[in-house]
Length: 317
Image 1 (cartoon, rainbow, N blue to C red):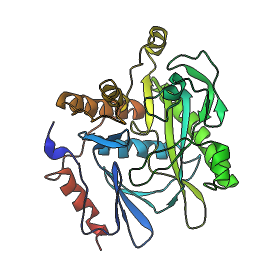
Image 2 (cartoon, helix red, strand yellow):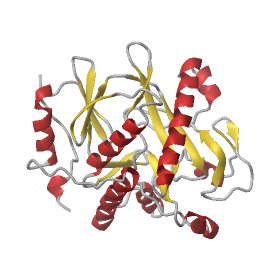
Image 3 (spheres, helix red, strand yellow):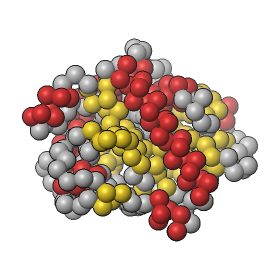
């Protein structure tokens, strides 16, 4: 693992209107487009836990695969890919609701249905789950469990469709559109994942509107950051044994942290180097398994940021 190939920060002073997210850094250009740079930061529990070599490149290229695979379902924000870590997208007004779709009773965060179910909750997200379900059990059908879209490091909060409409977060037409898009996208993702020996367990989608009011898929899609993937082989045995299925996503890092502390109350233990290295390998394996392509990182430039700066020079003002 080479520290020079970790992109922890993507500050480029020649680019205007910087917005620094948990994982991505954004720059709004005068022509109405947005530069989105995926760093190697790993976020969970509303915190930055560490940085993972090649993670940003894997995320960008995995999302690119899925954007291309789902372009017939709904419009997306992509305009160009000038660098392996970078997408140029349409600047959108991001809708204040994250659309989370779940196919299994799973999760580790405070908003996951498994966390709530273990606490005895059955009424959640405007629906009721039956008694007697087991950890990681397949749901009768995919469900939408929306959350508020927290900006500037805030906490996501569970929502129901009724609350979304009553609070005016989305119009009725917008809610119907994003719900329909999300379920069809998830079905496509599950079908493609199954062809690769994977189970797409759950995922989140972010949508925005352009200047004409059109609803457009934004951010990322079906990546190891925004989604939970299990290996199909071994799922039944793990479920029968009551153990956590083998995964290809950042969930095992969340599980490592959650096993050692309450991440919402306690200090987070330092992530050991061997876990960082293992996580990098998991992200690369996820890309290769999902896409069926080999991952060959772009090692040009003295550092990842140097390479990105070179490739983005045409966008400097």
